[in-house]
Every structure is written in C-alpha cells, then in structure tokens.
Image 1 (cartoon, rainbow, N blue to C red):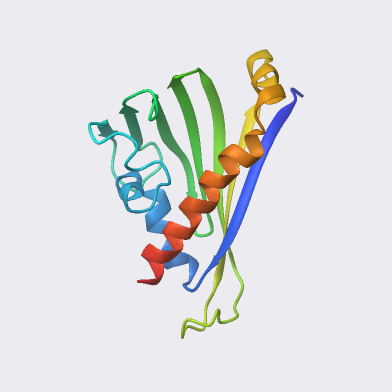
Image 2 (tube, one colour; image 1 turned 30 degrees about the vertical axis):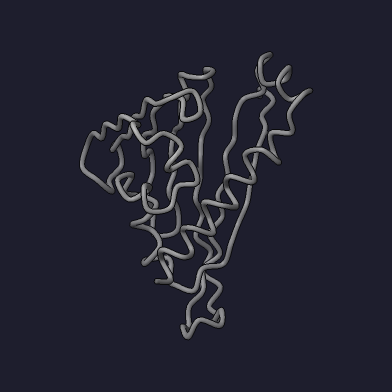
Length: 160
C-alpha cells in the first residue's frame, strides 16, 4: 500500500446531519462556505451532472492563487460525502476528501436538540514532489488552517 498523507479537521454544528448534507453534496453550494472562495474574482467555474448526486462535478480555473482543478462526488450517504479532488495548477496532485457527519445527539447551545460533528478529511498519496514540498512547508498547518476556516464558515451558514 503506498504511503499517504491525511489532513483532518472537525467542528460541531448545531444542526442534524440532514441539514448539513446538502451543503456538502451539492458542489454549487460550496461558494457559500468554501475557504478558497474569493481568491480570484474572475474565477471560471464549470459544473456537470445533477447537483447533489454521485457523479456531479465542479471544475475551476483561476489566477495563481486559486489554481485549477476539478472535483467529482463519488459517494453520498446520510452521514457521509466522498469526493475525488484533482489539482492541475499550480501543481498536479490528486486526493480523496471525505466529509463525515457524526450526530452527537446533544444540544450545542444554539437552541437545538441535535448537534453534528462535521469531520473533513483529505488523503493524498505521498509522491516525490509532496515529500520535497513537505520538507519546506507543513502541509497539515497550511491546509488544516483552510479546513478550519471552511468548517467555521459552513457552521455559520448552516446555523443561520
């Protein structure tokens, strides 16, 4: 089995999994909470397939900061969304992302009976390039910070 790198972050959202799932499974809705939204005001987006279903896609191409790539929803279940992620610029890479929705059953102080821990996990193969970059940049801190930001924005959108 090839070596991999996994980055994982989580947050508790004061909502049931069913209220969160559409924000993750429908790639059109990522503009509401994605931590990378706004990096390029002229970003070109292209969507394919039926929104919120397995096989739906999202491709983007932007400035150096936004880069380019595509995502494909590969699995949707009541408590999980799986996505294949591929970057083509500023570097080539591929990863799998999993969003897991673990209902806590306990209130989270926002006047609701249901809380859900949203876990965002990305797994990438350890390539020669990722090993080189990893000696200069702590990818967990770099990407983990983006995950933290995105999860906080997702929480704000869902709890509104």
